[in-house]
Amino acid sequence: MTSSKREAGDPPSTPPNKKAAKSDRSTSLEATAERQKRGLSSSSRLSDKPAPPFSLSHEQQPEGGTPQKQCASHASSKGNLTLSNSEIRTERNAEAKACVEQSLVPDPPVARIVRPRDSGLSKLVSNVAARVCERLEAFITSAEQKNEYTALKEWVSGQRMVSEHALYPCISAFFSYVSRQIDTAHKELVSTSTDNNDNNNISSYSRSRVLLPAGMPDSNPDGSDDHTRVDIALININRKKEGSDPVHSHPGKPDYKNVAAIIEIKHRSGKEKDALAQLYTYNRNLYTNQANRRFTWGFTICSTVVHACVFSSDNIFMSKSMDVNSTAGRSDLVAMLVDMAYCEEDQLGYDPTIRLDDHGNAAEIDVYDRETNKKHTLGILKTIMRATRSFGRHTRCFLCRDDVLAENVVVKDAWAHSKRRADSVGQQKKKEKENDLRDEVVFMQRIKDRLAGRDDLKGTFASIVHGGAVQIARQHSTLEDNTDTAFGELLQHTSNQCEFRVHRRIAMKPECVPLQNIESVDQLVVVVAD
Image 1 (cartoon, rainbow, N blue to C red):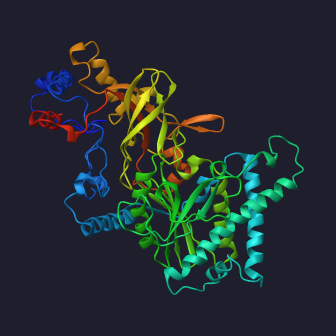
Image 2: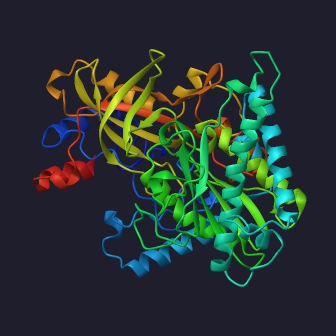
Image 3: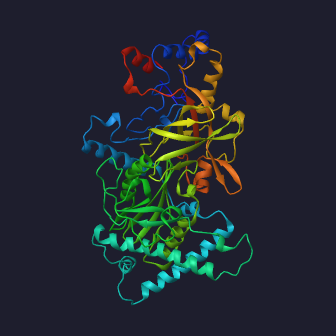
């Protein structure tokens, strides 16, 4: 919304004269609009205030306020202009280690997030996973002539543990082999299917995507804001866009726009927290380069032990260990990779309400209007602000075209803290939402209603056009996108450290003026005062 002195959810200070304060509050919106009229409309009031470099404990948080997190931002942000690359790395490393210690949730059922929701597809996926496991075990014990996948045997047998670099080809071969066998198993099951029930006919299902390791391990992906190299990037290859059989073509250098998950490798066991800290730092670039990313995935591999990890806005959910040195561990890992190949986009952390063009840039966005219960689809003309942090609101802003209004609007998209806690499952009543001081949609609506009829102030304050919680389609229903619907039963494994957030989106006008376009000291004073 706006970068004012305090967020909508911050508690107002208590004035010494309550009677006078009441009168002041009744005219505060009009006064704000009058000040804006002197030089600047709803300029630069899109971004959130940068959080301090170190977090406060929950006991230190102001009541009713938004909890503060450690948030080192993008290298090109104004807050980092005076820092050297070395200082930025030091800050980021300290942040990552602290967040892993504070926010790690060990051993939740992470695999269930990507389990296909459709019962018929879930049955097919289970059969595919079983066939892939059979072939994998047969391949491991065979004495076949060496081929492109032979290196995986050295990893699952505990060999090649001398360095991370020695493990790169072995682990890449494992993930590539599984991806290839998924296609083979699927085709065999479809060709041998005799089920004539339309609801369970496996020939009607298809694999949504191919996840392949990039052909250049230990590289700095395109789109990075620093020189850090990722061990292995899993590339998300869309079957419909890339053709019917992209399994055999390894992508070269990774690009953060196409990365589904990152694999961090340690050749020694027990280094999971170090690997998690590195994944945490990489996630910043995933959010920056992927306008449609809601949460991220990653894998830590320490020797032969694999953990799948989900990074939300506040927590790191780390699966139970999957040791590829055992049949059971390999089976669990294969089952998860098969699920990830078939599940819906939102289960991998993508936002289906933001569509990208062929170059991976945001092209179209849906804005749900709470007042009218209607969805509005807007064309994206420009990305004004990108998400630049691993934890937090992940605020993004877009300049969009509303063809119905025949004018441009600014859309703000953010995961905002909500009054409702994570243990309150289900849709919230409208009255309860209106009482949530952190709800920016309600706050913006109040501004619009209070200043309605003030033609002399028209164009001098941000006015809401559409706004509400993002709605995600789930089979035959639509659900509000929030912490509950995104992570479900994982929240049962968390303590009070898990904050509840709602994914909200607001379309407003008029089009904004960037801060760098301020032309006078008076205008700057107005922005700071507001």
